[in-house]
Image (tube, rainbow, N blue to C red; front, top):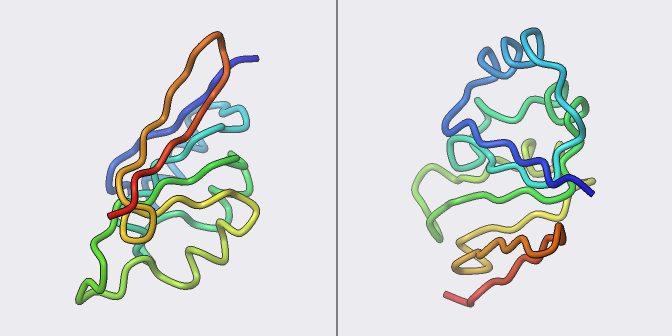
Length: 106
């Protein structure tokens, strides 16, 4: 088993297209969702290509921007979504090629 992760902080949908055109990405185990899950990130095309098993959204509770965006959450529906506003801190551990995700309530 190979753990694949994807981290492009605040990548826009335009950047996602550039990434897809430039790299042959395997299915991703963990995706750090860009820009707090705003509507300008995590396009359907990008998510359908990388097929993340887990998605992590760093977002403040009751933030004034309404992040994460409902459409982005819908695009990520086939992924187990972890959100800092709901799950608190999120720790990802890899040991013996096994992935373990732990949360600590806010």
